[in-house]
Image 1 (cartoon, protein in one colour):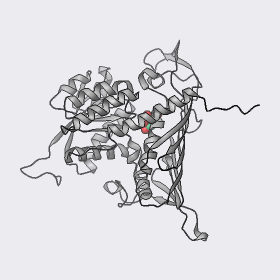
Image 2 (cartoon, helix red, strand yellow):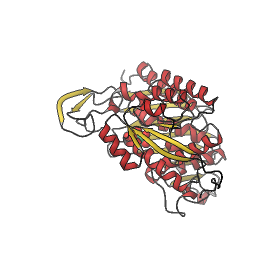
Image 3 (cartoon, rainbow, N blue to C red):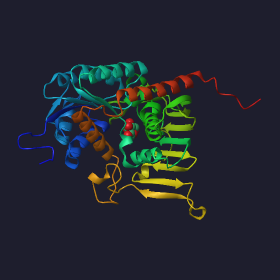
Image 4 (spheres, rainbow, N blue to C red):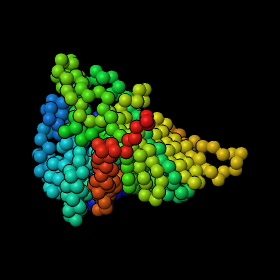
Length: 398
Ligand code: SOE
């Protein structure tokens, strides 16, 4: 029996409904199953319903992950009395309608990143969240990498002054699943559905992670977007999810690569690389924070470690130390395995579920809030406007 349960006061249920059953639907389903087993949660998440347009695939996902029922219309779960939290893992074009309806129906909301496809949509979501919060209905946007223990620990170190005055940040998120020009069209390559390409899909993670670790916002940006492959085969059956390539070809309307620089509040500078054509890089997220007193580097491919450089160390001992972020004293790690056993990509989603449920039980605003998600959307929008303007590019030839 959890410490939160007493004989006359069983833990309150929190009925969860998940919208979508793709990659993020799986990551969130795993978290709703696992978090209650490893964290003593103040509310008991109940996997009530999973929603998807394809009835057979949704039923299969419900059976696989342990959702009590499969639904085909998100409106049914938003109106259902046995649902108190709506978890949105569907494409960005669906976020604003579902989140606003759920909040107005009194449901807490977790919405995958980026918050929306446009600043205007993100503003509507943030306003709805502000109104709902007055009624004790809470919303969070799912920037899960904040909850990788080593990234949370990096934030703690920066806040403690471990690198002194921040001077420069390097943020890279490198994937290569679009290198092959014959790779098929998917919803992620359609601006009307995904909102943008690498910029919003993986660049948004970088923006949030840099702002989270430094505790500062990006104030100005200059960007460059490029689409190398402008059309791709449309699959005969389901777009992007298997089937035989048809002769039809679809227009790619989002960026393959987004490069941008930024001013950080307080005067530091940052460079960002978000790409899905970095041949050989599969999901290579790397962050490096450099300051007057030292530096911190993180690599998702070695996600249980943090490289820490102390500029104040004796000169014959200067160098990056490899800190193994698996001690019980580190963020989240004490609830899993003994030191040295390590965590994976999926654990950040369990940490996200834990923090959200804890905030809901306490009636406190979970972070990142929709307001924070809106601020990231403004950064993405500024990069897009800067790239469209292109006036800062100067030819090198005479
Ligand atoms: C893109 O391929 C992607 O799936 C992102 O959408 C996720 O947010 C990231 O965690 C992994 O890569």
